[in-house]
Amino acid sequence: MAVMPKGFLKVQILGLLARRQMSGAEIMDEVERMTGWRPGPGSVYPILTRLEEGGYIKGGGRGEGEKRYTATAKGRRLLDSLRTIRSEILEGEMPLPPPFLLMAHEIPPEVCWRLRAVMRRMMTSIREAVESGREKEIERVLGILERAARQMEGEDRK
Image 1 (cartoon, rainbow, N blue to C red):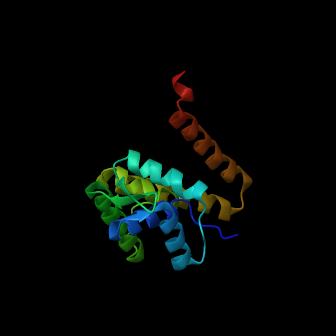
Image 2 (image 1 turned 90 degrees about the vertical axis):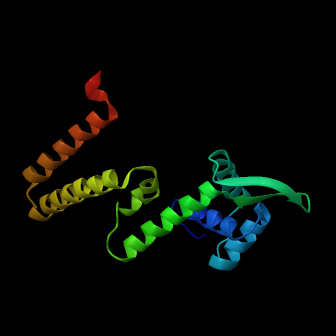
Image 3 (image 1 turned 180 degrees about the horizontal axis):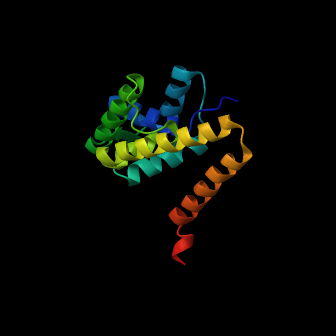
């Protein structure tokens, strides 16, 4: 069984629907043709529902008994943003580390760059602590991260 990165299928579906109107079955066929991996209906239809509820795609016209979908202007703008992010990654100017990339289009660019800078500093500190091999230093960094996590989760506000 192939493992696809989280978010891959959503972006793939949006890209396909920006090109032409398709049904869920056609989307599964096309993803399989392009990647060799066939997503199941349990993956495709919930994504279609979320994209439609978010206004990124529009479902309508039934062809051969199936609902057909197409990208909206909002969906095309999102796709353009994701393509910009992808090109920034390829050019070495990634706004956020990979696990956070799909959120990058949801926040202002200046906030995105600030998050990137803070995360880079944190990762550098973690790497340096681990590379030092000093257990006391690793524990110090872990303590800082645990306190920060509790603050972000709101535990300190109780």
